Image (cartoon, rainbow, N blue to C red; front, side, top):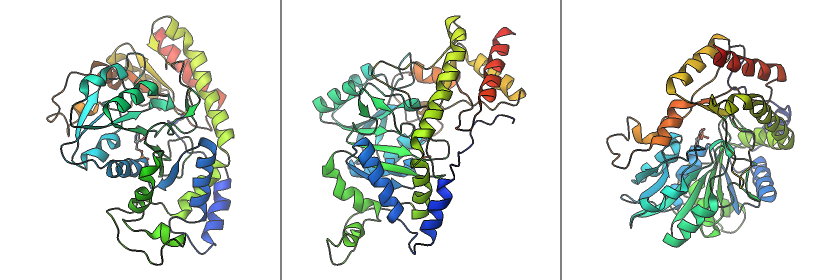
Length: 376
Ligand SMILES: Cc1ncc(COP(=O)(O)O)c(C=O)c1O
């Protein structure tokens, strides 16, 4: 492809920090660069406790363990999301109760949540699709009323806001991704954020294989051992060093990525105005963080033809999630209502090439190719 869908950005800072970590004498987890990353995220976004993980999937699994999810518990989440949002809770025996998306954006339709709450409901998991916030006041109001936990799947959401609050700082816990498709990355990586500090001590134990090793290294206990369940969720300090190189360039990365989003949006507005397609809707309470750019076609066949049309011109555009309630794994287990909006996004949403080094000429090429499709 002349214009790939994604190309991870290399700032140059990563190599310096990885070399420093490599010669420091400690490259396993919870080292100097892990601490530097933790400090940065806490200071910049006011997060409670921060723990780097090997993926967002792992951070979600940690949140399910911390939430104390047991077989038979119910967890409400959108169907239009990545498998890990659900899998983390299914691994603990939860029944997933899928909710539909909004008509004007793929986030969970908060007006549909209350009717899904039962005596078994333990948590609501929201996904801020494309880093655009869900209606968090509504979610928090329901969760407080029914005494439920709120977990933000903030995989897309670094440096994005709900009103003036950073995403990931609102729920009891949040999970971020630093996979290579994300704004800042270390190849594979993630982060658990704990805002309800009553979960913090246990989070650190689960993170380090069920041991109190972190407390031992801080000199709080004289030996460490097995004190709880847990797993190996912490990344090597080499990954943290790489991530720190990206963090140092966060403002530059965000500036560039937001410009790409705004350019696509501006250039495609005419097609939206003529009713050919739908562009991302950013509610007044939300911002965008230049994570991804999507458009929604009027018909599924149009989406598939548009992907083919772009591919023939050397442009790699892709669809996104298949709705989880229709997935081979969950289809038989799903007994809930139809979820027409989730299915519409699965059938009609298309993501355009989006990465830091995408040039203005390349954006123009993509935009022109879309216009040529609609002129046919
Ligand atoms: C909404 C959502 N949650 C979780 C994940 C999993 O992230 P990771 O690949 O870091 O495990 C993804 C992947 O992109 C995602 O889109």
